[in-house]
Structures are given as structure tokens and as C-alpha cells.
Length: 249
Image (cartoon, rainbow, N blue to C red; front, side, top):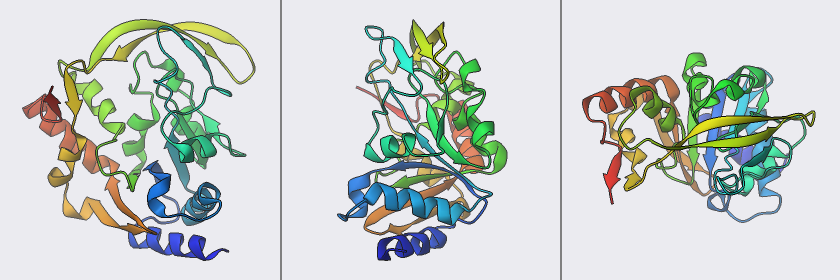
């Protein structure tokens, strides 16, 4: 095992990542440092740390390219628009992807089918069948690797339960292409956020300190959040103040 991989696993253990965990990773690949085969080494280290009973998940979002003007989503071919690590993972052997035109997720591990298999049933980006909504059901964790706590897609699933006034935009009909080549047309209610900036890092001070770990993974300042705690505190805050996690711009 390469030196970086050994250090990665040690760093993950210090942040409370254990065998059998189900971990959703948001990451900046550049933040971990400059070395050869970074994406491959990172994914291999995550899988080693989680073991055969765990599950690794990464967003494979495509909202920048699958739009009202270009409404076609191919689960096998449409690239992720949220970083090189997510695209490497999406195209890796043994990795599956959920069916959603803009907010799909890739996963590998024991509960991949549980997380991904029903996402196509939703009519919104992060509804009750989404991997984001299922993570707290199995005591999952969310990691922010070198990217801070703001790019927290899971917060959209919380917002979809509370329905703050900024959340939804127009409806769009997309063409979805499945792994077997079959296609369907389906209408989704897309997120809006017109006139608002997302400020999901405001969740961090609300968290119980025991449910939030912070430390370094190689050169990347990293956060790990307990998904159940995130849902409990996030929903409570949205109920008290629906505009708490946004700024008007």
C-alpha cells in the first residue's frame, strides 16, 4: 500500500470512520495535496476503511448540463459536474448510480442498492426516496473533504420536508435513459433559490460536538457529520426560521 493510502486510512480512523460505516463524501481533490493517482488512491483508501459491510457514496450531480434546454440524462454517460473525484468514482468498476436527471448519487458497497434503487420514484431532487434522505435511516455520515460545510446537498432533503419559500422553481420534463438503454420522460419540480445564497455551514454550530469531527485528511481540512444529528438539528432550525440557511442577495 502506498504511503498516502496508509496515511489516509489513519486519518479517516481519527475522524471516526470505521468498518461498516455508510459515508457520503463531498470533496475537493486538490485539497488533499499533489501526488500521482490521487482519485484512485482516495477511493481505494475509503473502501478499505469502510470494509465489505460499509458503503461509499458520492454525489454525481448534473444540474449544470442537464437543463431545460438540454433535458436528457443518461445514467451511464452523463458526467458529474461536481468535481474530478466524483467523476472518477462514478466511472469506477463496481459503482452504481441512482436515476435522477440533476441530483444522482454514485455508490459502492453493501447498501448501494438500498441507497440508489428508488431514487427514480422522486419528483424532486432530494425527496424521500433519495440517497440523501436514506442516509440517516442507517446512521450514515457525511464528510466534507477540503471543501468546508457549505456544499451540503443533504440539506436540500431537509428543506424538502419543511418547504421554505425559496426552495422550488419551475417544472421541467426530462428524458431519462436507463442502464439497459430504455428511456422514459418524467417531469420534476426543480430547485429554485432565486435571489438567495445557500449558507449551510450555519449548521455546524448547531451540531452536538460528539456528532461532528474535524481534522486533517492528508492536507485537507475535513469535517465529518452524523447524518441523524444533522437532520434533527437542521429540521428543528428550519421549523423555527425557514430562512436561517440562506441569505437574500
